[in-house]
Length: 331
Ligand SMILES: Cc1cc2nc3c(=O)[nH]c(=O)nc-3n(C[C@H](O)[C@H](O)[C@H](O)COP(=O)(O)O)c2cc1C
Image 1 (cartoon, helix red, strand yellow):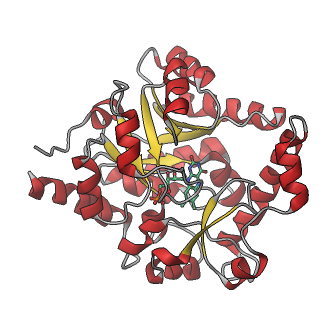
Image 2 (cartoon, rainbow, N blue to C red):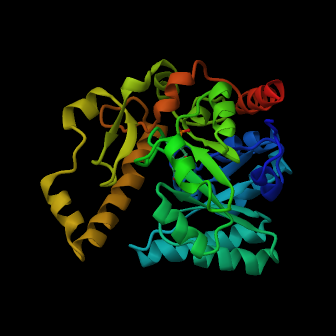
Image 3 (tube, protein in one colour):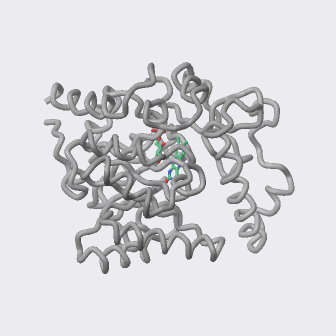
């Protein structure tokens, strides 16, 4: 029997097992608040909050609090290539904990320091889910104390994984922790299908870009609504690893493979860290333009194959409501 109550809803204190995934540069406070207010949970992306949408981090969290009293989450990117970046992330985590955030989604690396910090500050009440694309990363995350897994599949927007949603469930289902499906879910039928596979919830990204509350350029939203699966390509040119983006004339012109120098540097033991830092800086700058500029000839618009199920720009709460009703109807 399908039910709205899952290990995810219990741990996060929410009503609908639906996460609005962190999205650089698309996550803004109003979007996070709208999803949480409707019964799912919105995840704050700190870089997006501060560098793209111009909020002081603590003030941004307080803005969300004025819009909803319901639980929200925060994305902690465990990127070790830059000390400055790591220290900044630690400060943001502390601010989030002070402001009452209790649900965290970690990406990259080992989440141990986040798990420990959250446990110390939240008196055992905090929860950390880690993004994974394969079983070996899942095992590492669980060794580090993660409470759940977000299984990023080959249809996801952002950094897609190599495996299908079905294959990931087979790989991760016996690890004894809740597994959330991330990738390819753009409508309520796909939401129900993911829960039927045994997932404890769904993390959607692309679907929430095409909403009234998301503050990206109108052209970007329109392209998501119009696009089909074949309009999504994986490019290495932004971050050095495959990133799902909309096929635009610019993407077609420059191609999707990293340049020869970048590829050589990414292979070297020492040079790879430098290259990742360079990519990190470029990523922050290049992707930010999708929000402010919009439609510029050199923009990258991230989106996943879930575009196929997205038919209109609508309020974020309507998407959460339809997912809730679809599960209730499927009982
Ligand atoms: C525009 C965009 C930006 C993203 N940025 C991040 C990010 O900063 N951190 C992160 O953990 N995941 C990021 N993701 C992944 C999403 O949180 C989510 O896992 C993914 O979008 C799910 O696939 P879907 O787009 O098919 O729904 C991003 C996805 C998109 C589409």
